[in-house]
Length: 400
Ligand SMILES: Cc1cc2nc3c(=O)[nH]c(=O)nc-3n(C[C@H](O)[C@H](O)[C@H](O)COP(=O)(O)OP(=O)(O)OC[C@H]3O[C@@H](n4cnc5c(N)ncnc54)[C@H](O)[C@@H]3O)c2cc1C
Image 1 (cartoon, rainbow, N blue to C red):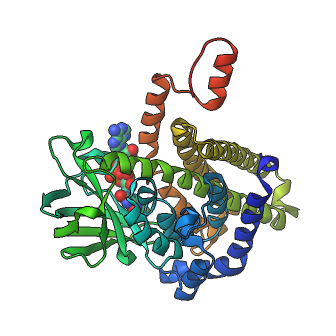
Image 2: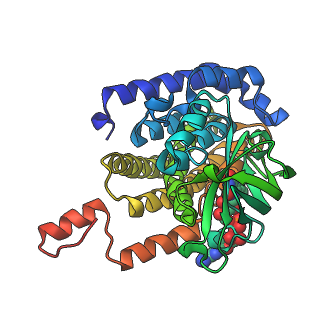
């Protein structure tokens, strides 16, 4: 697969790898200990254009394809997760709905500032009683003249404590709900009645902030509706679908780093007068790690390329998210085993990644929800590109 990647993509991947090693990795421990990215590093990331890689060039971004951006995410995931987390919103959940469904005026107003990192964005869908069941949200938006009035609470919203811009999904018609009663809005920080509530302290992902966002009679101008009134659930689902490839690429990058660390450790560490790497038990673990990483990589690159060809890849995207996020869980477990006590040491990369990797199975749709999605697609006759080609060749039809 690597051989088929365009030269310019490989160059981008190499440049990001160097940036990670030279500018970010030296601060990984600092981020973990102080629970924040140092300001001068954030500035460097902005100067590198990292906040707008996927935003169209016409609006000041890098205009990257899905495949190229997956390679960037893969490399960025080899250091502290907070660096990727903060840029992933402006490049995905926090901008995609504006790119795909926003008005021209909205695009001109917000996208250049998101691309430069002058504005930091957040995507507010989840509520205390609506996570997997996103359709169960209760935050309401009631039209009053030339604006909507928002009331309700979102929680576990990434970037919320530092965000300037919120993409908010709210109910505009409780009867219709997902059939035309949910709407997406852009809400700016400082809007009356918008406050940041409790900041969540999670097991991993330090330096990446999540909190409640509370709306109390918050007025939002009608022109801040993204797409059409009543079509917000579709806007949100398209956005979340897009973000799932990010979780898959992150899982891949983390797993690669863990394999590299494990190989190094097994070769350097002497036990009973021999390197650990001489032990067949260790070799088998490395073999499983490498094989699973290769599978995830092949799936992710093929699916990203399919998205770039503008073909329907919903089934494969769900498979990538499910497989890669579970794969990194198995890889980190083996890395822990290979490092022995060293893997458990607080402050080690393996220990940090063990905590950070666990979330990848939960956000952007849990593993169970992904199995439900994949199962339904298969039962409806959807097939992966490879299975569809085989079916057609054998005269059984089928569709991708
Ligand atoms: C660190 C972090 C950052 C986040 N960032 C954001 C963000 O920026 N914006 C945002 O909107 N949200 C965000 N979230 C929320 C995230 O999207 C949800 O946590 C996720 O969708 C799962 O919902 P839940 O946690 O409410 O789990 P629940 O829905 O309560 O699920 C609990 C368990 O039940 C299972 N389950 C639920 N329903 C079904 C079903 N129908 N079939 C089978 N099993 C089921 C789930 O798989 C899971 O195992 C974030 C969460 C975390 C932890």
